[in-house]
Each structure stands twice: as C-alpha cells, then as structure tokens.
Image: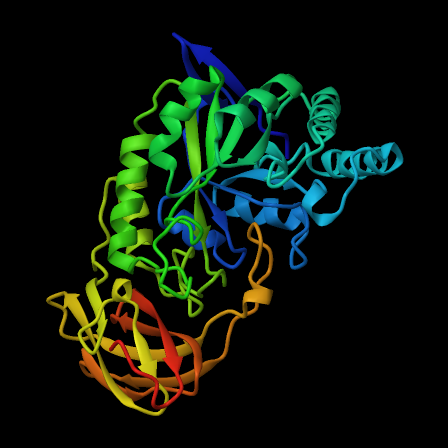
Length: 416
C-alpha cells in the first residue's frame, strides 16, 4: 500500500484539500471506535482521533479499519498538556516527547488512509507557557521533514482572536489551524476577522451547545437541549457557518460519532450507549448525502414534571409522588418509552476538557413497549438527580430529553 498524497491548495483565494489530486471536502466526525463502519454507512468520508493508540486499537489497526470502509483519518498525536502538569520549560521532557511522536510518524506515514496529523488537542486550554507552541512548531517541522505527503494542524479550544494570533505567529510551520467550538460557532466568522487569520482551517469539534455555555438551574446544574432541539442546532450550524465558508474552511469533524458520559450520557453523542442513533445523526446523513433516512426518528417536545419545565427549577420533596409528561411529534405508533432517574455527576468528579467522567447510578426506571407519555414516580432521597426519557422506534432510533431535579427533605417547601 502506498501513502495518499494530501495537499492543501489555494485556488482563486479559496483553500481546497486534494487527496491524490482529487478535491476532498471533509465530511467527518470524531469517532467512538466501535462506530467506524456506521460513519461510512451514514455518508461520512473521514474521522479524527485524539491519539495514536486509544487503548483498544493501535494506530495501524485504526487506519486499516478506516481503509476497509473507504474513510480517511486525521490522526491525533498525543501532546502533553500544561493543565495536566507538563512543564514546557523542561527541555529534556520536550525532546523526549518529540522523539516518541517521531516514531509514530515513521510507523504510520505511508498508510493510504492517513489524511493529516493533528498535533495535540486543546493545548491552549488554561495554559500559561507559550513555549508549548514552540514545541508544536518543532513537531510540525519534524513531521514535514520525514513525511512530505500529509499536512499538519493543531486543535484549539475555541477560536478567541488573540489565541489565533498567538498560535499562527508561533507555529508558522503548521499548514492550517483547527477550532473546537460549540455554542459560539456562529461567532466564528467575526473571531476570524478580528484575528486577521487568512489561512485554511477545519472545525475539528462542533455539535451540541456545551454544558459550560447553556442555561443552568438555580442550584447550578446545566440544562440540556432535547434531541430535536439539538438536531436543529446541528443543521443550522453546519449550513450557516461551516458549509457557508467556501474560502477558508476545508471541512469539519462533528462531535461525537458515538456515545460518552460528559455531564450526562446523552449530551454530546450522536448515538446512545445501546448504539441507537439520534435525530442529529440523521441530520448529518442528510447534510453529507442530500438524502434523508427512510425512517425518521421521532421528534420530541417539552419534558415536564408536574407541568414544570427545567428552566422553572424543579424542586421536589423526597418520597412524594410526582407525574412527568413528554410531548412527542410522531405518527409512528410503534414507539416504546423508557424513563429513568439518574444521580447527577458528583461535582468533584466532573470532567475537565473532555477528560474521563464516571457515569452516575440509575436510581429508578420504568419502561413499557406501549405508549407512556406520562408516568408517575416517587422522588428519591434528598439529592441532585436528572429525569430522563428515551423514546425508541423499531428502526434503531431514539429521541431523548432530560431535566435536572433537586430533591429536598420531606417537609421542605416545594416549588413544584
């Protein structure tokens, strides 16, 4: 197998990626590695990783599987983060890191599924030492010296104009920049304009509004959009920002083609833990292929407890009985409903920057194959919880909604 020849071109002031001489617009995703085949099935053409070896598969195994399904890979290179304690003033440690990454480049550079190299992930997140960017630039120079076939980039948290200026100035060897931006994605054009950055870029993470940028309850728990609201956001953000920039943007990687626990089990994944797809996954299929799925996932409306919405701050009393209702917009009669109450993530265990986060315990659940648009439940013991509803169709699709609930001691005045 011979390496793909990947080049970034600027034609008539527009940037374009070419693979083996053919235009290649990235319709990609960050993947959970059990979902590579489904990405191809839904019409994606590429995926990104965060590191060469994810603990389950080696970099070569990942590339082999991508090649099997006709996908290209932006291979992430694990670069140490200052927020995890790495010291970029330690020249010995920096040199050791470069030598280790060089071996990964030598091992994988000739694989035909390799698209480009992603040098580090969100190294700007709470960093202070600008020498990290000198290390990134040195890594890029090393890569270009031994691998002339693949571009280099680095993934930035957000797209603050001053950060863009800093990285562009200190990393001139990079071929392009990559931004990871969620609720603020509509501000990206103005951020780029203020930064005076005129190079090519990708958006390597985007999707649902982040838990750090949405409305919170009065006890400071974030309120998650339901699956239909998220699907609308994915559609508009891709159409109005990503695809709309035909000058500098060479494509994107939606987050996340799979499932992960981050504040909730449903916040960022386009799939659920049982591998069912959400409405947002079908939206991406349409945006990538121009074709809607034959069986559309049900659209979901408002979730209420005792007729209260999440934004109204739902306080309950322990061991009291309450009713929950969900609005559903579907003509499908063959739907099944699953209701759960899950503990909130312990605040001391909340992930930072996408790091691992444990999945909280489920304390109550009820499921029926027939319609259960309304259920009654007994509030658990005092504490912070979330009420979830999952509405499954017969075609592997699920609509979801949840709300935070605060359970207070019996006898405490309740706002519900």
